[in-house]
Image (cartoon, rainbow, N blue to C red):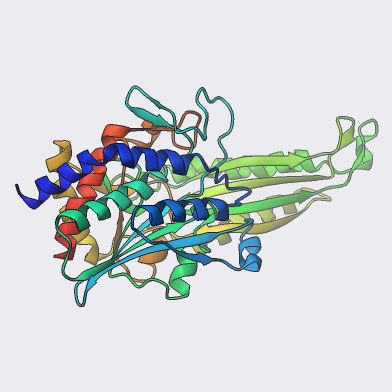
Length: 408
């Protein structure tokens, strides 16, 4: 039997164990916000230790966690050293997730299985790849343990807030120095590029007044509507800007949260809204931010009695392909085609991830892991998020085969 077939057979023989492992990970909530994620790291470390993959805990200092807007973070590293020489390959998956929200017909923390699918928050993004990577490593070591090289399995907990106290923190502290890296995926494709993301909080200040005498106040909500209309008008302009990266279309802007006012019979004196601006790889984040700030302040300046404060919440740069990522793309595509029986394209995604933090440091990387053909199919970040267990099994085989090639 060839090594690839032996890897596949080992994964098949241990797949029930892999599914139980994923269920245990789903059952410990990691809603971010609020981001109290150290308990999940503790449980994950227990599970990794129990199957012979010791996990080193790296708690992030509380002041740094709070500065990032979170409550607790312990990042994990499972380091497998095989011998001198060879490549060091990092595998990075994040355990933090958005809160489940409403509309679930399954327990979001239950890890329930029905009709070959596992349901739960983070079943598809990205606790699933805690298991994909772990069992790919176990298969590799059981069947064809490499003679050289190293794997750093990085399990982090702040991707939803940008990754700066997750992989960014570990890279800054030289806790990992990979030559190549693969990050948790969410579709059949090999992702080589992704959008950037700018998030701003805009506070519109007016003057509160009784609704019976509106002229005695300055309506912050009415002013906010004017500013919002100016921002939304940009989306029409953005459609004329086209990215050259396959899978990515054009920039866009969304306002996802609005707060303001004190009561129905009071002229609102303050309104706060938060916007999300997705940037294609060809755009410069600093320029995008400067233009948005200028648009907001110039629009506010036309409104008597109105002032605005603009605060940056997040600036996540886009991920641009590095030439050194070709070995990753080639081996994943080769084995993806063999295991899935179809061509596996390499393209960009409009999402943003913490993979950019590796690429910004010159470390070639791609995104690949367990997922459906499209992110939407999995209900990721929506009610009833789920993963087809057949996709989990196949992605684990692709990863084990790819690691064998990359470490030889």
